[in-house]
Length: 359
Ligand code: 5AD
Ligand code: FES
Image 1: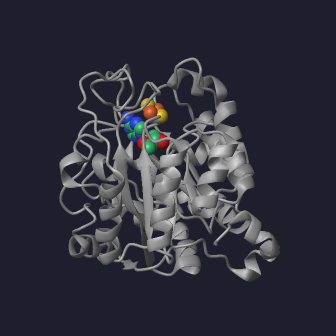
Image 2: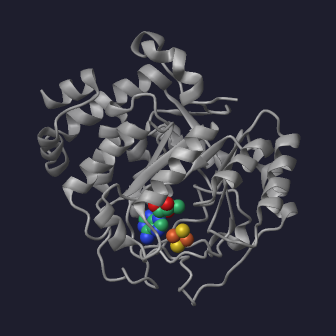
Image 3: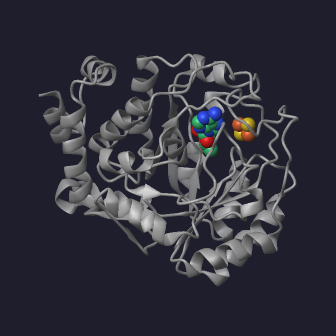
C-alpha cells in the first residue's frame, strides 16, 4: 500500500516514510516500482558524466572528508588549465558529453582562472554540458561562471537538519549558507544537483526524512547520494560506514518521489560493494560518473578510505563500463543527458525552462 501510494502520488506521510526507511520489508516492491518509473522516464538509458577532480586542496575542514584542510598526510595536487582540457579531449573521444569539474574549495582557482577554463571548454565543446562542483561561492561568482558557459552545478546539502549539519562541519559552515548557495544557483539558471550522505555520524531517520522534504522544496534536477565511508585521517575515523542497503532504499524512494530526476549510482556505492553501482542502477539510479582525471592523481582525491579509482569505473574503460551497465539491464548512451519529463504527468511543463534550464 505504502509503495503504491508513493508511486502514484509521489509522496507519503512522515510516519509511512519512517516505516519504509527503517525496515527492509518493502525493499523488493520498492525497487520494482522504482525501476518501472525510471523506465517510463528514461527507458534503459544510463547517462555518463566525465568527472575531472582538478584540485584536492580545500580551505574547508568538514569532519567526514579526506581532503579536508587539516589532513596533513595527503599529497596535494592541482591540474593546470591544459591538463583539464586534455581530460575533456580524451573524454569527448570516449563519448562523454558532460564534464564535471570537481574540486575542493581552492582559492588558487580564482574566478578569473575558472572563467578562462570554463570559456575554453565551452568554445571547444559546444554540444557538451559543463558541470561545476566547487562548493560555496558568492552569487557574483556563480553568475560569472554561468556567463562563461557553465550550466550545471553540484552542491550536496549533506544533511537538511541544522543541528546535524553542525555536527558534521566546523563552526563557520552552516546549513543556511548552503541552502542560500543552492537557491542562488537555481535563480541564476543552473541545473542544480544536491544530495546527502547516508549513514553519516549522528544521522537519524528523521534527518533522512528532512532531507527528502528539503529536496521536495528545492526540486533539483540531480540528486546524488552515497553511503558515508569513514576516512582514517579524519575526526570521524572511528565511525562505522553507512549501510549499502539503506542507500539503495533511499535511491528507490528518491526515484518514486522525483521520477524525472538524474540520480547517479555513485563512486561511494561502488566502493561500499564491488557491485554497488549495478545495484544502484537497479534501485532507480540512471547516471554514472566515471573518473576522467589523470591516472597519477586519482589516488590523491581520497574523500574516504579505499575510494575506487582504477579499473572498470575509470572513464577510459568504456567497454568494461558498458559491460557492467548492461549486466544490470541498462545501456550507456552518448547524450548530454538532460532531465526528461513526461508531459501528461507534468502538466506544469510550461515552467520547466526555469526549473531545468537546458541551454
Ligand atoms: N564518505 C562518503 N561521502 C563523502 N563525501 C565526502 N566525504 C565523504 C565520506 N567520508 C561526499 C560528500 C561531498 C561529495 C563530493 O563527496 O557528500 O559532497
Ligand atoms: Fe572541502 Fe568539505 S572538506 S568542502
